Amino acid sequence: MKRIISILMMAFALVVGVKAGDDKPISVDQLPKVAKEFLDTHFSNEKIAVVKMDKGFFDTDYEVLFSNGDEVKFNKKGEWEDVDCAHSEVPALIIPNEIKDYLSANYPDRKVTQIEKKNERNKKYEVELDNSIEITFNKDYVVVDIDF
Image 1: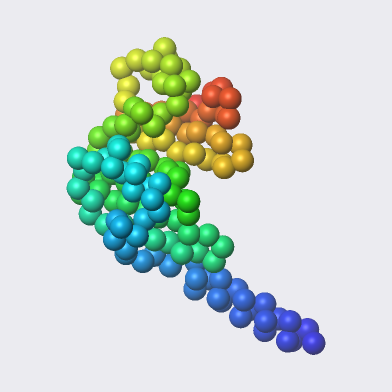
Image 2: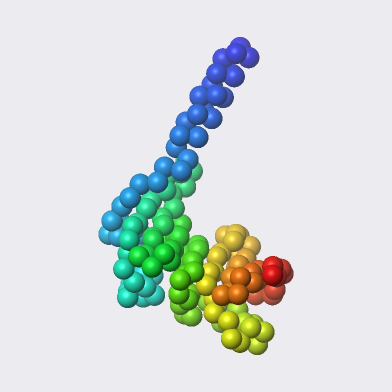
């Protein structure tokens, strides 16, 4: 009996391992509507190089890579999770006002090159500036960590 359970557990682990990281190129039209609208609103001037769908065992994510090297990641609903503009600047309209206010007061000459929603429930935001400083905000937009 133990042997059968061990074999079943190994088979399950193999299926999970094979299924995880299953990136597949797709067209922009195959993105969720919310993601397409986000791209049209904030990245209409950028040329899309590739769109990928990562169909995991329990979840599906989308990644859009632009010709300039910038990228946006979306969850299965099409909501942005990570905007990485290492070669440009994160569009100001997607940065919450409270974070913009903090950055204007404390880092007035810096650009935001990346913003990431860290946890869906607690909704932490991590922001990276053009000088590589990373600032983490909690759900109330209070700074909880700064990495220099």
